[in-house]
Every structure is written in C-alpha cells, then in structure tokens.
Length: 341
Ligand code: ASP
Image (tube, rainbow, N blue to C red; front, side):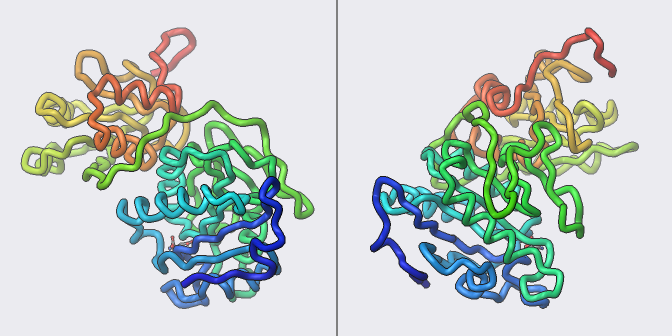
C-alpha cells in the first residue's frame, strides 16, 4: 500500500529535498482504543496536521512486543532503499514503544547514510482524548526534514524530546514521558514546531545487513538465582548470551560456573546490567580477561543483545566483539580510583 500525499516530489528541488517518507509498522500510535493496531498511516498523517511533501508506506501493522529480527531486516532494507532516493529528505518510522529502542539501535548499526532516520511512537491511542501520537508524528516529520538532524544516526522523538538510538530506553510503562537516555541525555528537542539537535555523537561501527540473525537469549540476574534456571544453556548452546547482571554486571557465585562453561564451549558471554543506567566496565566485578567475557559498557541488556546478534552474524570472535562494544558504549577498563564495588 503506497500513497503520495500533498505535493509529492514533483515540486521538490533535488539539492534540497523536503519529502519525508513515513514507514508505518503499528503500535499504540496506530491503535484506536482496541489492543491491536488498526489505524492506517494516511489517517495518522491527517491527524498530525501535515498534508504536504509526505509519502506513506504501511509496511506492517503489529504491536511491538511481536516485532522480531525478521522485521528489523525488512525495515532496514526499506530504509536503505528510501533514503537513497535523491528526492527524499528523511525517513520516519512509526513503531510500538515497547521495543522501539531495539529497532532503533538495530537500524543505527546498519544504516550507512547521513539523512535523518527518526523513529516515533505514542503512549496513548491516536483517537483517544489524551493522544500523543499525532503530535509526536508531526514532530518526527519536522525532524526528518531538518538539516540539523542529518548525520546524527537514528533518532527518536516522543514528548518533544529528541534522543539517540544508542541510549534511548523506555523506562515507564504508562506515562506519556516514558523515554529517557540515562547515560547521555537528550540530544535535542522540538520547540514551537522547530527541531533543535545537538552536535553529532561519535560515529558507531556499521554492519552489513546479514541475511538472518542468530538466537541470543538475555539472562536476568536476581538474588538467590538457582543454577537449574540456566540448564537450557547446555542443550541450546546459543552462539551468544547477554547476562543482565546485578549492579555493575555481577554474576552470582551460584551460577558463575554455568556461565563460565557456556563461554568455554563457544558462547560469547556479554555482561550488561539490570540497573538501567551506568556502565559495566571491563574486569570490574568479574574477571573478564580470565573468563573470556565481554563487558557491555553503557548498553542495556536489550541493546547489548542487538549488537551481539550483529557481531555473531558477522562471525566476530570475543576480542572483536569487545572492540565493537567499546566503540558503541565506551566499555572501559575498571579503575580502582574512586570506584565502588
Ligand atoms: N504495546 C504497544 C507496542 O509496543 C505499546 C505502544 O506502542 O506504546 O506496540
């Protein structure tokens, strides 16, 4: 389903394109109150009050807990195709908020262009009295059209806050102001209908789009964790796993041997933290050198999983994987100066 709205590209100068392509995937922004996404992208656009120089494509209509790596691959391909068009200024993706951060980070690691890619969602159905979707979409289109948003990697905009895919995370289950970037903060804002974006961040490494992504589980640490809960590792033998450790990425003594065994048998083990902010530094809490583990730096477990999937798909070993994590998140060595354990 493809629609050209308003002026389309005929009136657009190629050296200064204004056309924004909206790729719609579903989520609460496309809900009319029911639990499933049903509102089509043209209706969403009408609600946003923008009726010119926008083209829409309804790519899928799913709620984001059901987004899978296969969807990321479809989306990444579409983004590359659309962004390569000389008449296009930028791309907006409407998405459910639950896993928006994972899709955003995946695209950030695989998109090679400089045009703005903006992911947007909503915490309230778009037809509800208190809906945030239409305004969020309006802001996203403005951001995707803005020269200031070029060369900034993949951005998100919700509640007028512009955030970078590498750090943004959903940290409230119902509030309209549900997204934060706990380690680097917002990178911009929309004020009086005008986007403002900070200077570019350090470039992320970029991965070629693989044909498929490997299964990578996330194991969540808790007090009293029993080794039996990890018994699936012996039979599943995943190529990688992310351990959402306590505090600075700690692994309880009771299960450390099981995790060590998985690493010895070829699973790339990445230590992240369940705390939601701050870094997991290399060789802090756990001896990563001796165990052959990788420290996730500031990447939360779900983002660490996205990066690890791409590293495994690229055939990287533990050392190369650690390099990629350091590039994405500053997974620095532990220092005893002023540090607490
Ligand atoms: N469950 C919805 C989803 O992620 C929530 C939302 O979009 O806000 O698709």
